[in-house]
Amino acid sequence: MRPEIVVGSLQDLTESCARELEEAAARAVEEHGRFAVALPGGSVATAFFPRLAHARVDNSRTDFFWVDERAVPLSDPESNYGVAERLWLKPRRIAPDRVHRMPADASDLERAAASYSDELSLLLGDPPRLDVALIGVGPDGHVASLFPGHRILRGEERWVAAILDSPKPPKHRLTLTLPVLRAANLLIVAAMGETKAEVVRRAIEEEASELPLSLALRGTRRALFLLDSKAACRLSRS
Figure 1 (tube, one colour):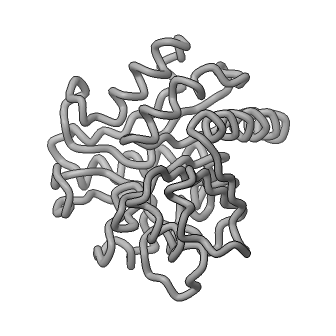
Figure 2 (figure 1 turned 120 degrees about the vertical axis):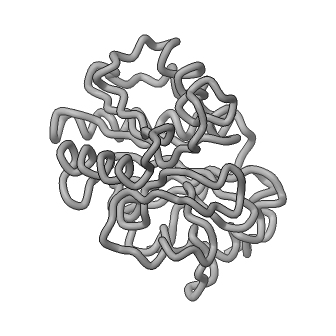
């Protein structure tokens, strides 16, 4: 299924994302009593979270997960959880029992991955079904901490993986795997800047692409791209 595409200014994109979040949350709460969303880090977090924190969502029924996390202290500026805490969780006074942090600061990352996988399964089923997964994309086409050519792209049986050899520092990370991203009811891909234009084009227009972004899109229930004009500049007009 071809993804939906929205092209606009950063304000347009954050507003579109907030509306999608509100609609998905209302539907999820009505259908199964809770709304499960997985958050990214990086530029998408800093650009989108100030607006998303004020989306009309019932926070008392919203469970927050993460698509990936770096093995750094929570106080480190590189911590995905730290950014979310500062821009979303604390300002909205989210209850601690609704926050499911990826324990990437654990001493044993393999055990931490298994623990987070069990938590996802317990709360969201097998495979875990998020209502919304919000992801960014790197210029190389990586999503979450799933990098081009990495062995974990071939591992379909795990929900969460420990990455001990990331080509981008830091080397140690935790990440959701492709089956979890694909199982989400809505996968939102946010990309901004011309450095993302080619991988966005390949993911949308090349059926045989092996980019992690392309692989994440295959089999999704619904995918939505939020692009600024530079990230969309190489897409065909059709």
